Amino acid sequence: MLRLFNRMNDLIPSVTVSGEVYLNDVPIYGKDMDVVSLRKKIGMVFQKPNVFPMSIFENIAIGPKHHGVKGKRDLTELVERNLKQVNLWDEVKDILNKPGQGLALGQQQRLCIARALAIEPEVLLMDESCSALDPQSTMKIEDLMQELAKKYTIIIVTHSMEQAARASHMSAFMMIDENKIGRLHEYSETHEMFMNPKDKLTEDYITGRFG
Image (cartoon, rainbow, N blue to C red):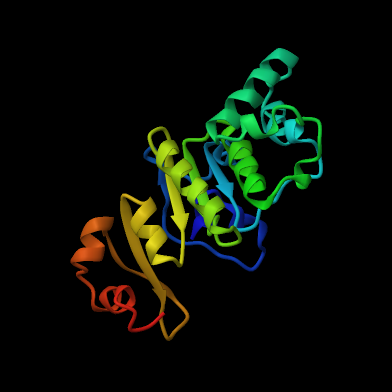
C-alpha cells in the first residue's frame, strides 16, 4: 500500500492500479502528474537502512543536489539542519566525510530518515522501519516520529501492536483475506481502536487470538 502513495509500483511491470489516491485534492495517478515531483513530496524509509555507498554528507546532499541546490554553503547548512532534525548531528559531525555504511544500524536508519527529509517532503512513508533495530534504537526512532509528526504527515506500517499504540495518533487494521485480497477492516483513533475495536477481526488480533 505504501508503494501506491509515491507510485513505486510504476516500476513493477506486473502491477496494475485502479481507483484514485489524492494528495492535496490532486489525483496522484492523473495523467498530468509528474512522478519525480510527487516523490519529492512523498519520501520513503524502508525496512532495512538503504544507505548509499558514499559519505554521510553526500547521503543527505544527493537529493537536494538533484533538485537544484548547488551552493556549498547551502548544502552544508542543509546537511547540518537535517542531521539535527533526526538527532544524529552530535554523533556524526566530526565524521561527515566517512562512509555512511560504517555507522551502526540505528544510526543508518536515522541517516536514511534525514536523507528523506532533506528534500522537504509533505508526507513520510515508513515501512517497518524499526523491525531490524535493537530496542534502544527503536525507542530513538519512535521518539523521533513523535517530534517529526508536528511538521510532517507520517504513515508507518508495523506488525507490532505495541509500537502502533505508542507511536501513532490514528490506526488502520488491514488483513489479506482467503482470496489474497488486502482489506481495510477498521480505521480510527489509535486509543479508540485499542480500547474499543468495532470490527471482530480487529478485536481478535489485538487480543492475541491470532497473528
